[in-house]
Length: 151
Image 1 (cartoon, rainbow, N blue to C red):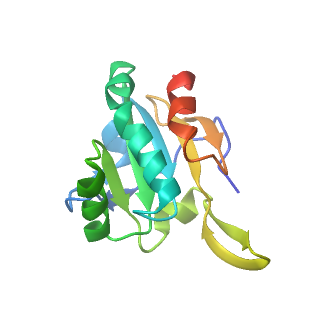
Image 2: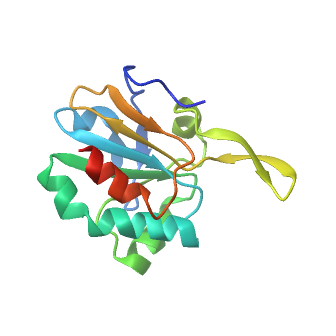
Image 3: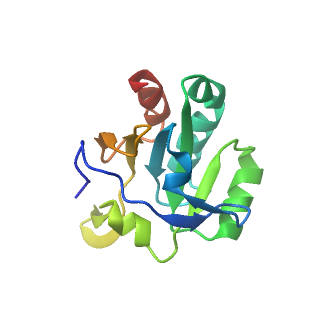
């Protein structure tokens, strides 16, 4: 279940595609688009990441930073970044700490089979670390534009 709008976003500490540690609290004073996606280098996730990357200057202009999170490794994130020349931070959460804290690890049905997995979801967090928008089961290709419109 997604976290509620109006609640304080849980702080976290995760490595990015270069192994540098990031904390949500590092971004106080900026809006944060925190998006969770299932897997590096898959078609939907690539469309979403490229959409965020292409709109990078517009997000920055509006005082927002984009952080993508998946359970892939730092090395996988680095390849993903290089393959598509992504211009934002990808955070690695193989232990699912942040994914679970944000309510993204959920039951998914695929061809009648129920498994646990990352539900593609996006949070917009304000300058004070409070969730101002929570979107679950977002469409990969549409999500970057939706987030830009919200700002």
